[in-house]
Image (cartoon, rainbow, N blue to C red; front, side):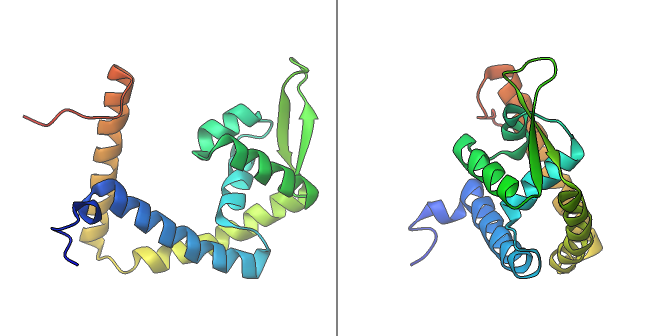
Length: 160
């Protein structure tokens, strides 16, 4: 089956999704074996570490995960003792999220390991390729964010 017969295999969004899924699967396998958490669990923990006291709404916004997925992950991490919830001081309808001492320790340990994994994956690229890759990712991201901000849609116009 050639990709020209099935152009979906050539679409940027498909290729990025595939790369993302392969990357998450590899990371999850590693993190589950060593720390008992998935890549998505770590994303949540690391975002709470980055912004202690964030609300569930803010976590959903930052994590780029679906609301139901974030809710399930938060509940599981609370049960594991890695996160805890507090009723908001300014608004009792808000729940703020914080890392427990064990959660803070895990985030610190996983960053050290994550850096090693990231270096191994990106180490397959030359320094020049990595610079080009990062520049391209930034450029595509900026284009889509700019377009979404100005039109309410992520569909960019073709460059002249």
